[in-house]
Image 1 (tube, rainbow, N blue to C red):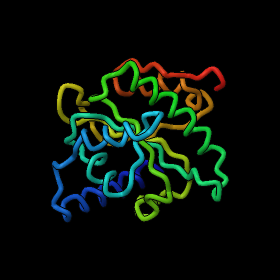
Image 2: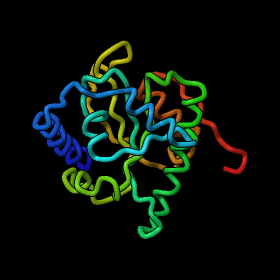
Image 3: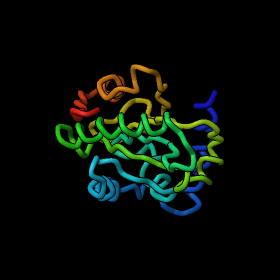
Length: 179
């Protein structure tokens, strides 16, 4: 049910793309610049970047996005745990994977509150996968998917395995000794 609400709101994002005249203007390089700004290779998104570079199904790359609330004012322990796990997966992909194939990203409620409301997101964290819809790594169904967050997917190895199955690629996490 939550996924259907999110997908309904994504059609709002698609409408927003049309109204802004930026359909087809997604840019892998724009996301890669954001990835390079983060020591763990996790692109920080705002609404414009999300709508322009993540939502379009015509993109040639996949994007894995956590929707989260990391500020201490929210006291969201599951958000912190998911962030730590996703960062280990993103670091590993950045070291061993094809950087043109998958981008790992984060959108915080403080950077995208309006979008969270439009998507009717009432509970976080969420992990969304926006597959490639064009190019050599395109999936037949490029519709966004919500990855269920369970105990086994809250570990770097478990999350890497689940994402690898979904996207058809091996993902090796970079798990620090003190994880």
